[in-house]
Length: 76
Image (cartoon, rainbow, N blue to C red; front, side, top):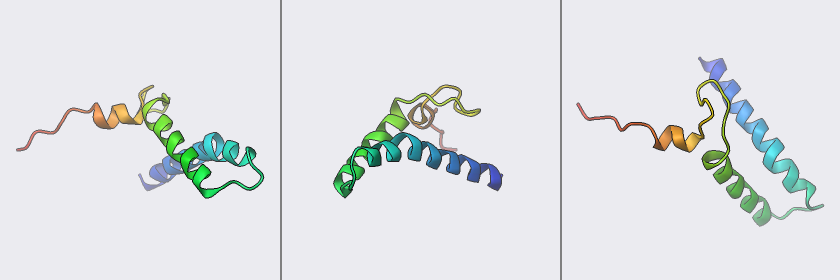
């Protein structure tokens, strides 16, 4: 289980690198912290709420659908 979790985290980091950081750094020779932070916040919102994920567990749903769309647990 641990190796699987590490693979998931590494894949998310690679996706953020390819879809957020590389374009952000390509836009400017010396990027500013505030611009990088703004880009990351915008990208994470897109990643969690708009971008469909095709993984085995997500099946085309977004992470927000998995978290907020889940049935609430009833207290025992």
